View 1 (spheres, rainbow, N blue to C red):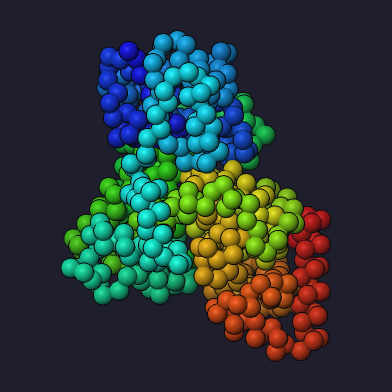
View 2: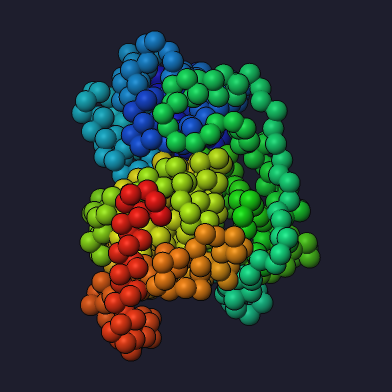
Length: 511
């Protein structure tokens, strides 16, 4: 009897649970490039090219291990262009008696797969994704014991469980995180190191040509294409990070510099989320760098927290609250997403930089996502659904399990505080402190309500004014709400007038 082992595009790991019992005899591995997955949001060209090339390289790796691989390329004339259609075709060709698949990272796809057995007439076994460090059920047990699901406490429990950066029962260095040391303003001339680049082989050249031809209307520039597309290349990039870059990561983790989209960030999220790297491997290697004296504790702890803490936590939040989570909109934000998110055309230097970096690289680091594009969307009351769709489309590391909680919960506070203890709303003052954008901007960051005032300033106060009742019960917002109430009427009126003018300019494409 033959078993069909389905491998999805973000499951490119030999240790994948659905491949555990795959054998040269009696197994067929199915991988498929389909339009239904490439276009359900208008994914960035580089994201599609990265995944297709990495998928094709992984298929070749499995073949060298003796496995039979059925691979459906996008331009195969017989391709049904849906995942179910390709499973159905493979089932007919292989006469397989059962299907094994590792659970997908998106609720919509898992719901579809749960109906496959009835539709196909063969058993469909959906396995846990054991590449994550805590199962969905494990996160549920953790969450059931708590009134509030704060990442910090989840992270501490994960540190204890896996014995990461621990000395007995105490955290290394005597404290759980070193955030205060990781918020330094960028000095003049701060530049990140040169990154590795890869010569394109025939597989990548074919994929780049395919994507250019089939997805010309999608966001993004495709060339130069710089991504690692094999586990070996991803390992080399991570090794460069640990050796040359990690020591500086902590200090400048939150910094933003024009023309420097990467600075000292690891750039491995796309590789982790597609399976080319495994989380515990990179955690242990970073931890070793600290204990060997190669990187300071604030840098290593900050890096590990992103993976052992945030990455596992947001996945747990996603699966615990879906599908209702995707419909949340605590501030009733419905204003249409403006064109500047797709074009980068705006006089706001910070936003232009973040969006244009995204267009060029399918990447921007977490502070740019949270405190620029996310903060602006929060302050402007942009449609939660449209903002979430944009984040899912434009970043190479974005899958709904990681994107939705980070965007809807963290950046937009649309879940009303299930994730964050307060909205991450900030005026231009924060951007000025953490970046060099404001000095060369057309707007004045020190002006609140003048005709040339930074839009973030007036929009910030408008956000506070409009949502004052909803924020009143949040103890972390008491001081700022008091500041708004203490302003004289004339000042408040000018700020609100300026905010409305900025929104009008935004909608006209003139901000």
